[in-house]
Figure 1 (cartoon, rainbow over the protein chains, first blue to last red):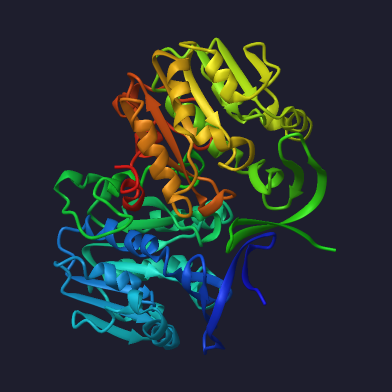
Figure 2: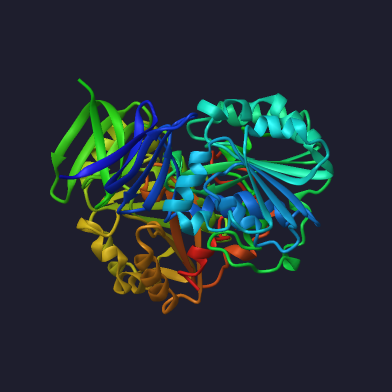
Length: 275
Length: 275
């Protein structure tokens, strides 16, 4: 018998992957959670019917959330990751020796539990002594911590289910307040092919709060359209002012110092969404 | 009844699109040809079970085949397109006023016929007086025309069916010979996620023939992995030496002068394939 996992990325378009095993398929307190094994992309975490991460392509998303911001901020000592219970962003954050403390606030403890068990390549640094893991609502955490963080990374699901509030202007204002005076944040902001309006709205909202707003892209095969956007809002430091030649090489598979600025050069139809 | 077109992009992974209509589904002298209408991507040309082009995302591929080379060559008067019977690359080529003549050599006349009928937005310039359309084997045409072209663009299917010979070293040597002394070519060279070996092989072969070889990427949602590579081989002019600030703005939806060099900055795992 052949089993295929099919994700309808829109009402009328999807991806389909042959699977060899289902490790977990359950309803947590917050969402449907599945951990499956696919032939093409390896083990895969699926939340509310959407691929969150896979062994084969996870490096793109996790590197591209973490490194552009951390190589822009000159001294990112205290970093917050909202969501990201699989631990992939945390793993990348810890590659920066300047980071003294990385706090992960994930609303769904089951994501952490199953990621540690089934995705150890991704979740393996969650027990690192530089990391504090908090199972809580990121929105609440943000509002309880004023002027606390150098960099905040929003590694959320798409704006359905528990992540809806993570795409509101109130949340971005909360992030602003939770950042130190020279802080910055980055959030995944979905894809420009099927969610153009979302990108426009987020960009407009963030621009009303942060003086420096930049959008960059990366290719993620298992995410809708294969092209993902990230929105960076900053109080002081501009990622486009970074001296690429001075960036150290770190161990990555997607991000490079050469790509630091190039990732911000957008196709015209994306440029038009955020100008 | 719901009808879905599913393309297995690999043995174990695919895309699926809801369709509303099948205009054509036939076996030509060279391949299986289907013209279908999808809700998400509009009308779609499918050859041998692989999406060739769709109304919604065709601009990416066609612009990114044409413009990096044509904005690198200082005087691209005579351009050859091998394959590309849908006419999309030709449409982009004609946006360059320096092009006096664009020759299209497509092996399968049915692709041209049905593209004109069902994809007029794409094929509409095939009757332009600056265009000569030849239904013939591109390999043969190349070998019959020495030192003839300024720029050659290989807009082939993937290396199965009639396009197999368009990925051989003999073909690249033929292209070299068909180019003038300062000519260049560009070819679509598949995706780095599922076809890494192909990209390595092509890169090695082209480097043995052309002094300047550059690889760039673009995001195409309906192509496998969403990340597509293009390989440019040049006798004299280097796309990375272009003065972007001097490039004119032309009407595009993906390519911009700002993207001209940024497209050549590769993710590390792609960089590693071609260094």
